[in-house]
Image (cartoon, rainbow, N blue to C red; front, side):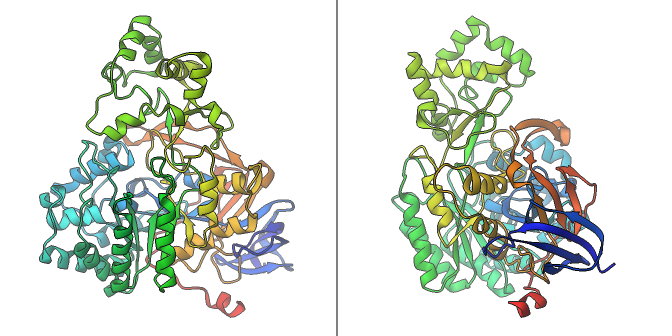
Length: 579
């Protein structure tokens, strides 16, 4: 046979952004060797006539830090055509770590990323201490996608400073020097970068702030210089960027980049309380790039929204004392209790209780809460909000919400956009997506398993923005590039994301007319029976990783060719010559 695999007659979006063309893709030894009209024969031939053929998707913002150590299949991301992922984002993760600090890192991950602490306790084997040890532990497992790990600031800070880090004390010169050395070692061992958080939303499960919240510029610069010492690694950060300090925050990161020479991606969203603030951040990114610095905006293609439901971790009553008393009961029993008139009266009369005023305010976010719908509607009209529906019915919104939560015996979900929806549409997302210095991020695969379901971002990008939105659709080849080669290049993966000879044979074959997402659902398959949100992709005919079929018609083949990728990957020589 001339080839291992030929995908014949597909509509090829090759990841370059160029026009779609009909042709064949030939694979040999895990690499693409021919694209266009391919003669010869192969061990496996696939008829892709009428199908969309794309590179495998690259998701650079997930939180599979724990799951990747105990599980081979990184679902739900791999159900949505993702063939490479990067985790360790937002400054949280599990290495480096000393034995006495393991609980602190679990508490932080549970609080920031809502991964059940019981699942982490059971699943994490802790057969590592240093970050290189952690990479070795990952390397011992096989997966259904390639994985890339980043050095999380919180773990690094606690490893070096202990309790002083948790108490938000400043790092001293010795601390910073040690962090610099450890950061360099992490990159040299195969880390892809360093991540940090300066967000007030990021708290431990007890409500304490993330240890990185107030890290000074000297500390951040010292760690960035560790990346410079290693000669590799990107920086990823999420911050507050409030109206009072965002210009100084951006200026600080520009100074860090000048000194370290390392690339930076910043989480950028539209906040409802500051609807135009994101434009200032984008302007700062533009200014940095015009100066010659490499800065990107890591954005979401839709609102980052919470799912509310009685089987989920959040809804309008989850902070009310009477609900807390029944939250762990089976759903049917919980619904029966809530249908009792006396319980209803008692619960509606209570106030939410929590140390975070932000979380309390979200429980009454009725103007930005909607029925999810089936199929899910992620751009609902303003008149469909709970607030407006309650007004039309002449009822109190909280009372109205009570009944919505009981619909379908408590099994229905509500959708509450927390960002990117200030004008009750996704026009701001459209601007961000089309910005030349944006890249797709924030899917948070593996995280927020009880109230957010965003792992299907790649599917949403291609369907909503490329096919279904009544206005403002975006060119499909451009979108494919945005979730393949553009994301790959953002973290230094120059060997994938293109259907070009020499590149890795990571490929999706998609029935584009049928592409979509299922209604979200819950499973209890994390360690210790932990709950997690799942949402399947629809229309994926086949996904190949290194030329090996990992999924056919949405079902796993059982093949696990995925491995740990250690550090940046060079552009293939064959591809460079062709280009």
